[in-house]
Image (cartoon, rainbow, N blue to C red; front, side, top):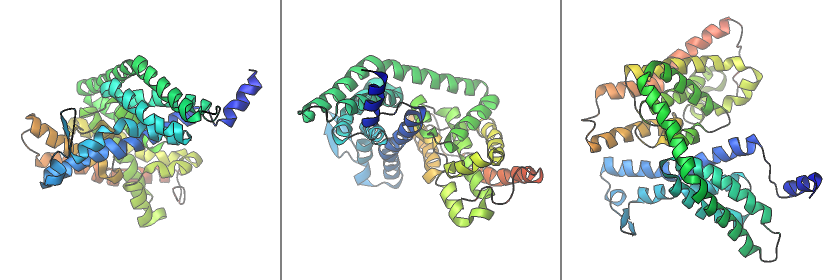
Length: 364
């Protein structure tokens, strides 16, 4: 096939090989899949345990001698949920989309703790191969699932263990470095994950793929909260209560258009995250020992805070933590809400006095 024919074929199949399609659209969708499975399952289990709700704590299904609660069933479907979400973002036809359920299960299972990264790579390739053959034969109902699932399973067996191990090695290195140098790494992790949260990529998916927990996870939570609460409070004059809610418990990504117009509005949230990150790691020893995806959620639906609380409960159950202390709660509230709400507007005030930011720059 000539280059022109290949380009025409890819265009007809809506196969767009680009950083945006794979690094933004697919990655962001993967985070939504994680949210609708692993994260929701964890929240359900936590609510059931803390409020003593029998229906949420008792096993409702047993598969191969493994018992599952309601939340456990949701969490067990994280691989298929991520893969289908990725397929949806890549605009897969129905047969490809449904076939990705198997691909997601295989790649997540074989990827181990680093399964999300394996799902991202394998699902993207399997989806595009499936799209390439979809509708090209008279036996599409056989060919499309066979190609999608066959390629997905083969790649899972070949790549997933290595990808999963690599992701966990990187995550472990970051966590080790944060434990070793909590001040410097507290700044670095907080700023970078916070910036990723506001950019049109997924900080939650990045944290999940790297398995980012512990002290590094706490720094990530701090960075995300600095961006969300910071933007929400310092833009209150322009966006009022609707903006406070949509950014504070929604996403600071809403400001991305304004950041493109005037990047200096980003100075205050970034500097705030550089301050709250080391406060989280050095002063309060804030750790995220819940699900890694929670590390990159900040105050979105209060998922970051629920994740920290879940981690506390996990630590108590494991015997590594005696009880939740007043200092734990003070640290979580200060890092998540109070410090960003105070520091970010103050820093922005100095930026405004320099003439770098003016009224209306953060209007949604």
